[in-house]
Length: 471
Image (tube, rainbow, N blue to C red; front, side, top):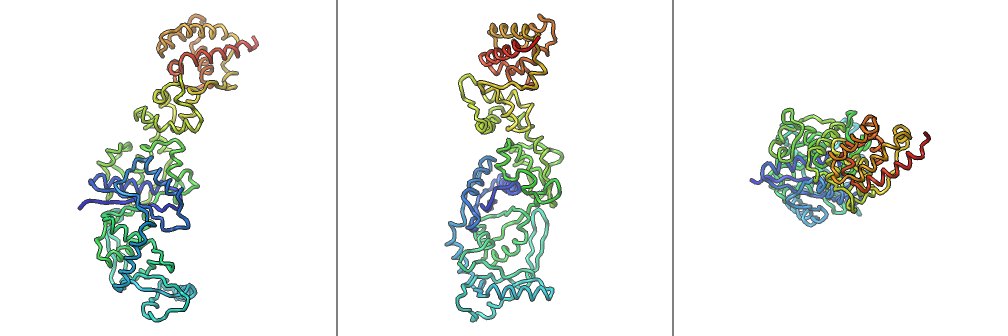
């Protein structure tokens, strides 16, 4: 048997991190077992489904690198197949038309609740098929077994048993003929030969109903694994109030896909005390049976820690590829003549940024022709008596042929010694002059990467500012 898993989001909103974790677990299980991973778009809710949401799902999957072996399949393109299955169930006496009005169903529910009974359909139309009120378009109900129980071994939760007496004759086709969720999912899983359904545990109540429909169709049952939900730091279900929820929001905020995947795989699963996992290690070590039964709490600080780890340890050209959109968002022309390679900027800045967005902000001066000097930094570090040493620094750098960090460092040391001042008294004004701010990576490496023309131009401007200072 070839393992086949699927991820089946509804395009009625953003692709949230809970969905991404479910997709990741399904993807990992397929990869580990040499199986297939399918992407299915469950877009039967025509009123709420949007193309923008579909695009966001596809973009999120692509950004994360969760490639699929087949799909995306769209349920709205499979209505003919669903209608055929509904007709099959009707013909075999496993489903029936229901003409009950909303008023009758509301009254039935109210009566049952007053009698402290669990509300459920009373099979009126099954027992009285001749009762067909004029002008009422019927729905189709699945004829659920009345005796016995649905028993299945959930790969995460363990054995689950639900008495059939607890289940209703659910509607599988609305009055307009549109198939409902539980019918479409069953047919899709059957047709696509899904062997393992890995999904959020908010679907666990649907599983017994879907098993009964699968059995009525004579289909082979898949194995089920229901993943617990993700909670916020406050113990409540993760939502917009906890910050970024959409996977694309994490991309916009400057997180690397490797960091987000690493964080999510550990959010409910563990392999000893190991915290950092490459994709290859995830595939090799992941076990669906080892996923925790209890919900997990999202911790943004831990995600930031992982993000910084990957910024520092991934190849600089890989990080640079993900940094590019952040630079574009700031309007910085990375490919302009005289600009340093973006990968070199990543290498220099990697120790100083937790997100790519922060790195982009910190790196603007490498790609700007004109920078603004921070007023507070100028007031603190620019002094009139530094005009002479800074002028000598300018000339020494202008005469420097070996434009390397080591050679630049030696020039700074020599100028400080010549003027009998602490090296920091030269380095800090130089830093402000070339970056506009009082903090940056080591000044010799920064100046080396910035390049000689930009360095000298900015030093010239700094000398003008120093000249204007009162003695």
